[in-house]
Image (cartoon, rainbow, N blue to C red; front, side, top):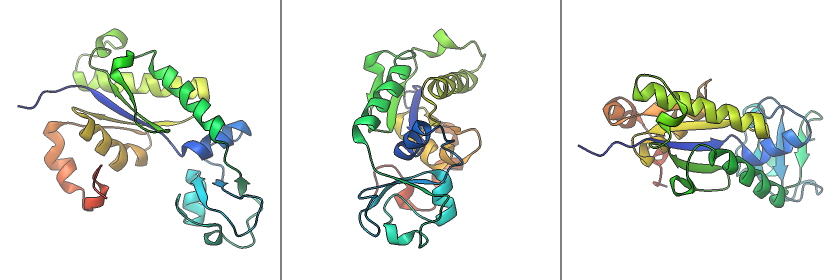
Amino acid sequence: KEPINDYFLIDIKSFYASVECIERNLDPLTTPLVVMSQADHTGGGLILASSPTAKKKYNITNVSRPRDLPQPYPKELYIVSPRMNLYIQRNLEVNNVFRKYVADEDLLIYSIDESILKVTKSLNLFTKAKTRSERRRQLAKLIKEQVQKETGLVAAIGIGDNPLLAKLALDNEAKNNEEFIAEWTYQSVPEKVWNISEMTDFWGIG
């Protein structure tokens, strides 16, 4: 009985690290790179962001410290200093892509690397598929491809009947599958939501 709307929660994968990769003409999905405060001082600072390959290869997170990396630092690993003004500029560019598909009142910039789009009014403008689910996925692919074309950045998109379901779809499925797109609906709550084993994997629960 809940009202059904159409929400996308869009995350730019490993945003700071991806921006730094693209600035160097490197593939953000395959290049081992970390953004580190005090990057010029061995042993100091914090790892602020890591590319997907760096996370997997060195078993680190975005709250790791330099000492958590192999010592001495691997030659293949790019270690770079943060450039917040650059990241803010890239965030503006990404959200300007979103503005091509939704009105300003339907765009919420949630953080520097995530935005919430209410696409209910946009589905019939940009897609022609028969079912609602197909139209959602068609539009998500269109936006994802446009972001990559204009900025080089890779987006992951959670689709949901409300913002919570979109966020849970993003964090628990879209970020981890090959397509980087996942849809969770009210009908899929028993199958999807109730099978999240860790309470801390729910958006808003720390």
